[in-house]
Length: 45
Image (tube, rainbow, N blue to C red; front, side, top):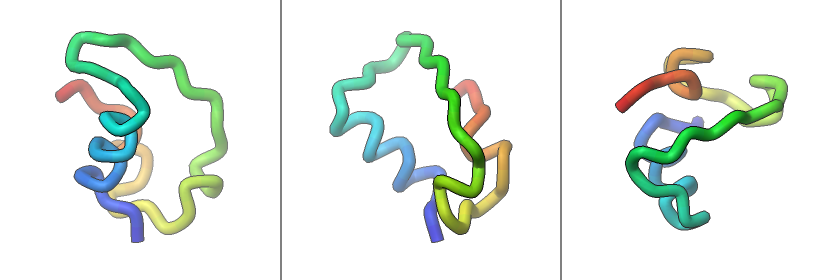
């Protein structure tokens, strides 16, 4: 299961920094089992 924390860590490793805006085009199913569903991907933290 992919958690919000795992997703944040992966994006950080890719060079995404606080304040950046990302546009992601993907099906939710491509994330695999996602804890919290779409809200895990679509957030402002």
